[in-house]
Every structure is written in C-alpha cells, then in structure tokens.
Length: 584
Image (tube, rainbow, N blue to C red; front, side, top):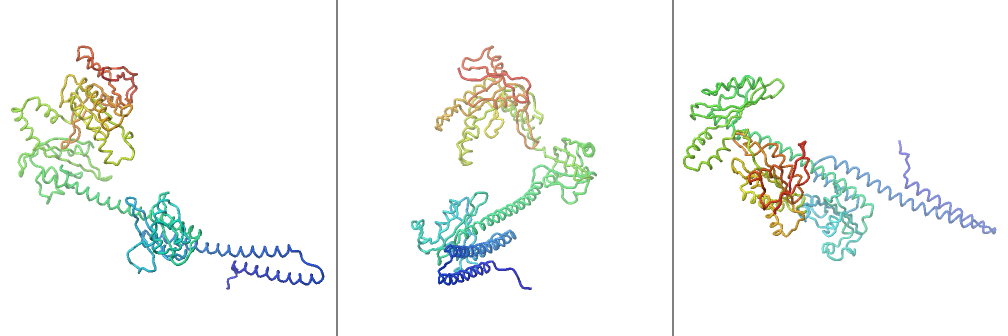
C-alpha cells in the first residue's frame, strides 16, 4: 500500500504555486477591469505578495527544522551507541564518524584534559588524509582548543584564517589556512574534562549555531560516557585491589609472627600458619585433622580442659605454659584461646600462641645486669617491662598540648609543607617537655600527651615541673613565631594540666605493647586543654594544691595562678575549679 503521508515541503511548495497562479489570474482580471475603467485594490496584490513571501520563509524554516530533526534523530542513535559499551575509544571513534557526517566537518578530534599537566590527551582523531590505525596526532588549532578548555565556552569561527580573533599568535591557523572551525567543551558537573574539535579547511561557514548546539549535545553524551568508563575502570581497579587484599590476608596469616591454630568442636586442627609450625617444630604433614592436645605432649597444663571450657563457656582465656619440646628443648609459651564460630552449627577454638622463651631468657639476663648497673636505672626500665597489661595506680601530673590547630595553617599548603610546619611546632613543644623531665606518652596529630612522675621519670615535684614545661613552651613558641615572621594574637597553642591518680601500664599484646596512662584524671586534663582559649595555660586546683603542699604552703614567686570561672566539663557533674597560669 502506498504511503499517503504528504511531504510537508512539497505541500508548502504546492501552496506557493497556487498563490502564484492566483496572482497571475488576478492580474489578468486587473487588465480586463482597467479596459472598463475599473481596477482591483492594491491591497489584494500586497496581501498575495505577503503570503507568497511568508510561504517562502516557511519553506526555508521547514527545511531548516527537518534538517535539525534529522540531526537530532541521528544524535539519538549516537546516544544508544555511546551507552552500548564501556570500551570508550571504540564507542567515541564510531560516534565521531557520525558527528563529522552530520556537521559537514572534514576532520574531528576528541581531547581529554590532564588534571596533572598542562598538555591534553588526544583520544580520537578523524582525518581523511591519515590512514586508519595511524597514531593520533592533532593538526588543528591549539589556540582555539586551549581557549575552549580554559574558558569552558564553545567557539565557532566561520573563516578562522581571516578571523581577527586569531590573526595574531596562531601560526597553525595561518599555516593550514583553516576556514570553518567549531570547538565545544566536554563538561562533567561544571568541570571541563575535555573538548570536541571539528574543522573544514576547504569551505567557509560550514558550521552554524545549529551545528554548535548539535556538537554540544554530543559533548554532553561523551562526558557521561567518559565518566562511566572511568568509573568502570575504578571499579575494576577496586576489584583487583580486593583480590590482592585477600591474597595479602592469606600471606599475612602465613607470615604473622604469632602462631595461629584453629580447631573444630572435636579439638582437631583445622588450620595452622607457618609461625605455629616453626614455634612448635611441627612437621606440616599429618597436622591437619590431628587432635591438638595430642600434638602438644609434655605440656605442663591440661590443654584439653581449657579448650573444652572456652568452647562451652564462650569466653576467651589466656594462659602461659611450658613444654619440653623434643626438637627445641624447653619452651615458654603464651596461649590465648578464643571461641570460634564459622557457621550456625559449626564451632571451634582459635589459639594464638607466642614464644616467650627468649623473653624468659632476657629476664634472667636482666637479673644479672642489675649487679653491674645502678639499681634505679634498671628499676625504671624493668618496672615497665614487667607490668602486666593491667598496670598500676600512681599519682601523676598529665599535660595535654594542642600546638596549633590545623585550620590556622596558611591555606594552599602542600601536604609535605603542612607536615613539615606541624612537625616544627611539635618539636618545639617536645623539647620543652623533655627539658623539664617529662615523658611523651603519645602524639595525636597536632596534640601531645605528656606525663610527669611515671615509672620512667619518678618526681616529687611533678606538678611544678609540668607548670615549668608549660611556661617554657610559651616562651619557645613566641620565639618560633618571631622566627617564622608571624605575630598570632592570641597565640595558637592551648595547654591543659591536671594532677591526680591514674593507672599506668602496658596496653597491647605480649608481642607488642605501649606504655600509657588511663583514668578519669587523664580525661580531665584533656577537657581542660579543649576548654582553654588560644594561648592559654589552664591548670586544675589539684595542680596548685600539689605545688603548695611541696613548697611549704605557698606558690613560688615566679608563677601566678589566676582563678577563672569553674568549668562544667563533659563527663563530670560537678564544676571544676580552674586557674590560668602565667609568669609573675
């Protein structure tokens, strides 16, 4: 059956012909009427002329609209094409061919901006003079391309060779005698990530605003495709990283210094790592599936009883044991047993064991060393080494120092510059603390926790030493500010001091420990530092009382304690009396 739909251009053309025929017929009638002394009004012919001109304009506009419609349909096909694959180069190359056909361009390029360099990466090039598969080489105007990348605005030149905007400073345009050039940015979330460039060296005015809008729409599609491809690449990289991490975890299990053994509910060995085999001098053959108690003969504890207790009680336990090992001799072992649930109906025990044989030997060596070194030196070191993970209660003075808030550093610093400047402030504060016999407990970013009268630095006048360290810190920072050429008002640092009883000891594991202080008094010292204003040294009433008690009931004349409004600090119901400390 024939298509009865009329071509709209043909219909307009037919109407124009009818109007022309009508005008001719009326003019003949005009001639007859003039012979009889009559005539048609001029307005009739003026109206017909207006209709004819209007139809001519409508026909031209219709041609324009149909061309635009055809381009948009082709662009919609390009959208499907771009979204059909994540192989970005292949998709963009095929889409570039379609864009060149739609715009009448001779050549086309897609360039991606490099955020880490001034140059750009040319991903796609279409040049009829270049054979397929040849290396991508841009032979258009870099002046125009850089203008679009820098401004983020499209650029259209009807005759770039004679365009006054490019007569100066563009040897490429003059050398190639470029005529029509169109370049539009590729944007993603208002950031220019590249550009689409097309030109024609032979014809002028090839591109109009319609082609500019078409190429802009294509650039928007390309931006989505580029970001999707990059996201896909990142996902693939993440998957590869996860796979690598799993392999790393397996490697860690094998390379960890502690022995790790897992058993099922019957106490038979399910897995063990290399360290366990080395510590116990096991032959890997025949270990998996064997009862763990049977694999540890001559152990001075009943391992089966402890395994059963952990399995049924659901609570971990730690114990130390000795074994007469046939291959290694007498072993001192630390065993940590934890319940293990692999699935709903599967239970077992995880055993982590460490070889304490060398540690025991060291303890024996230390007892010999005590005969030759000053007792107080050995005692300070040994007291920390032999502290259990629970520690011991002790009166101390705790100091928290915020050397400089990160927000106060100059903006725009590179990470290395920021780290160097922060370390300079930390070093300045550390020197003052060490000069007053304080011990650095830890660094926390731009903060320092220091202890006075710990087992490492026993001191009678520890509160006064902490105050002297804080005042020395104030002077040292003033000198540092002068050296850096800055005059902060107020100063950047904040200091909190409190005296009280804390628990000092080791935290961590038997193979790796940190010495620290824990307790409410430590928390209060931190709260005082947090509530101090910039450049302030805030001390609790306990600090003042300790100084007075060890100085005959009076403060030293060189130090001033000015009482401030009591604080309601977080975690305490009662308000805390505080003093601002300064030099007399």
